[in-house]
Length: 237
Image (cartoon, rainbow, N blue to C red; front, side, top):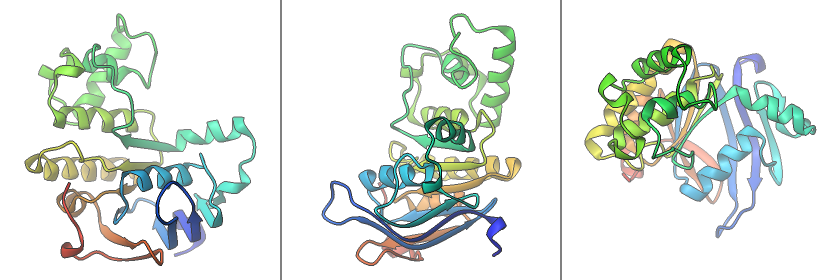
């Protein structure tokens, strides 16, 4: 791969956090438009990993490049905030306004004026909902009343709303029933292909990984090596 073809590069990365051992990534290269799933990282480690990729935190050792630029080179706060537009993040840590409707939650990337929604914003919401398989019947329901699979699609829809270049997913199916995981993985794959999105998922879910990703890797935490995943190395959550 040529440097310009890579969306994410990590080399000899070490990050200490409140765990028995630091997060280590010996080497990772994710090409533009590739979809990669990584197993072997728990919830706390996944948050650390995403913070490293977005530049919210810097490694204690090693180097991270995102779209060719070292994350350590972004030293200005305004520049870093502007750089966040490149990322769409799917995470259960993202706030869903449970007392607001699904439509109002989907509108949040576009506007804070959600009560009432303008006709223009509502039109954008409907397009986004259709793309993410959120049926019209759910649009006016309270977000706190919808099932977990719809909530997962809300997270995905908001992550792609502003046309990011890189979709980051942090255990995106942890709240889903096993029977809903394959459909969500297929949806992620379809959305990424249609938008030519690069996707990087931290997940312990083999069903999701096999449907959403083109490549699945498992982290060996002691060494930081990423190896091609075997199904037996994964556990479902």
